[in-house]
Image 1 (cartoon, one colour):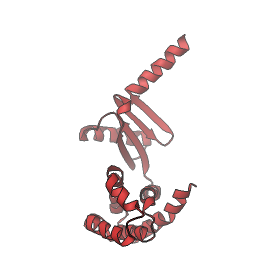
Image 2 (cartoon, rainbow, N blue to C red; image 1 turned 30 degrees about the vertical axis):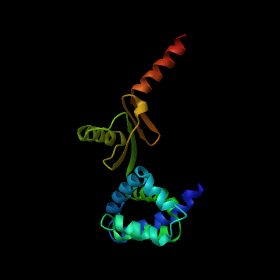
Image 3 (tube, helix red, strand yellow; image 1 turned 45 degrees about the vertical axis):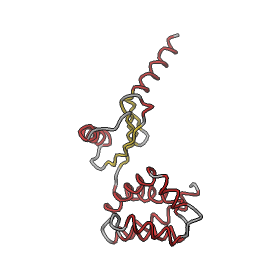
Image 4 (cartoon, helix red, strand yellow; image 1 turned 120 degrees about the horizontal axis):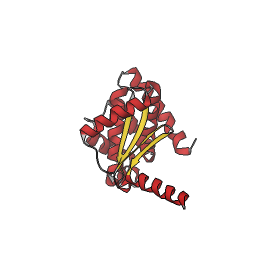
Length: 182
């Protein structure tokens, strides 16, 4: 188990226990996804939260002012604990680990979908039903990301199964077929 994961697991497990007791695990899981988007999308926010120059009390005040009305008290308490213990560098690892534990507990399968362009809501709905059919369950959590290197189409990773419907994948397969024919 990598060091960051061993650091993140106790915090994630504690958050899951608290949210289960309060019947708010689903809400907190959705909030964790939103926070991960903010974390990855805002270098300024991320840099401020991991900065050794800022005092933990300043970080907690910033978190409170930015997130109090957007997250549950249990999630806010976790963020404050991470700030107090100067563990905010593990923020994303804790959120990801919580989501893993939550999916495990709920029997939810994670499907990672990379597309060349952002998908429309109609495309997302169609893809969601196809992925659910592939997984054999309606409990599927789809993680969408955009990867312009695909040129066109998408790639779906569902456990060890990968469906490559991208233009770059087709070009690669064509190149391999031509190389074998030579």
